[in-house]
Length: 173
Image (cartoon, rainbow, N blue to C red; front, side, top):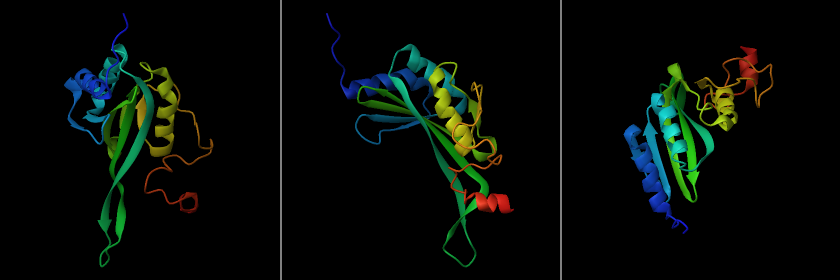
């Protein structure tokens, strides 16, 4: 006898139950989606629980840059404060039409957390992209060789951070 197909909402509810113990906050941005915020130290047990229960697959790891801003004196123009802000990593898992996103916030001054490659080896491509382009340190990722940028790219220059203004300014300093 075949198992009855679960609805998208049932899949979301099942995903929520699997990661419930690690949820700091949650949001349902649209039907069929659940975003849960978790602590950085909980990424590995949370991912392991999803993998062990066979809830979906890792479809992507994306990042968001959240710099802090100030306004210049006598102006309404917003200016990015150097080295102030946070980076958010989003681990997107899909099961049929359901999407469960694990959201992890890291401050710029400690943008470091564990790799999930020992649980999902293919995550290395996404992790290397986050390391290289936005400046997250993922401890335990199998390789940190450049994936997209040239080997002679300047250290600590991350082209997907909002503060990046181009290489001419970096090289000309």
